[in-house]
Amino acid sequence: MKSTKPHEIAKRTVWEAYQLVRANRGAAGVDDETITMFEQNLSRNLYKLWNRMSSGSYFPPPVKQVEIPKAKGGTRKLGVPTVSDRVAQTAVKLMIEPILDPLFHEDSYGYRPGKSAKQAIAVTRERCWRYDWVVEFDIKAAFDQIDHTLLMKAVRQHIREDWMLLYIERWLTAPFETAEEIVPRTRGTPQGGVISPILMNLFMHYAFDSWMKREYPHSPFARYADDAVVHCRTRAQAEVVMQAIASRLQACGLTMHPEKSKVVYCRDSNRTGQYPNVQFTFLGFTFSPRAAVNKYGRRFTNFLPAVSNDALTRMRQKVRSWRLHRRTSVTLNDLAEQCNATIRGWWNYYGAFYRTAMYKLSVYLDLRLEQWARRKYKKLSQRKRRSVLWLSKMKRISPLLFYHWRIVRRAVG
Image (cartoon, rainbow, N blue to C red; front, top):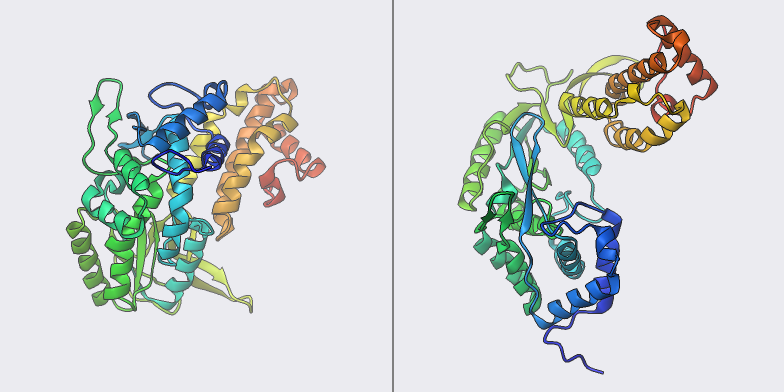
């Protein structure tokens, strides 16, 4: 039986969208409704959403604006849609992603199925060995500055369904709501919205990726959302490319971040020129000249990525926030169970390249465990040396207990 709704949206699509939202969890939006609360009347809530979307009467509620601190000061504004709106956005994303994603450049790595930040780091490492110069650049407040007219022009180029276009436009203009006021939006797409990353990728596909392929086909790049690096043969070429990128971004309504953009020389044992910038940071890894050993056991200098100091600082801050020394009511096994998932995630990402740089984190974790032991056991109280020996003994007894113990052994004494 043919649907009488103006827009044909399968109920199964809405159901699949809900499953994805549920798996991702996330905070409540402006209505303070959590996923648990949404699920208390799940069938009714999903039917109501499907009914409104199918009839064209769905209007997204305001997006809750929250500010989170940046690692180097300042804040980043994130948008938190309601649970219902996240389901609606996910339903549309499920339908437009198979259309848009195949269009994107192979070196666009952010928020794409089958692509990852580690792939971007791997390909950048390999290209740094072949190209002497890198243009590192970042776009200032990219998600907040996307031009709606240019974005919708790109969307209409590939999406034909009127109802999809209708809701994408409504999501773009849905206002922010803060504790004090409702703020209308005429630019940008909320960082935190489900559909925002694919819209960002579509915008950057035309603003940067396709333009680079057309104008500088011999300068390969890797881009992850608004963060990118471009490889060049010479310093002169890199400076020209950097200026051209800045002009191109400006023409598209974006601004190259002056403090996070520069030309870098990839110095190593074979490239020994003296230049002011010989390192850059991309996706949490700092690329710089580092000690390495070749297959013959000889030491040399290679240009390699390793976990950045900022990333290490953030991880140490996270460990400090666990307040392990106050959890004296639990066992060492309990601590491992509570912490291992996070530690494993850090090592799987940051330990993928030049993993010895991650040993500092392992040392810090063990220092915190020693502090916990001194608080928990009277015989170790105020006896640092004994707590070090005690932890070393625990490592020998249960070497697989903590994830970082499986990877690195800390010397004692």
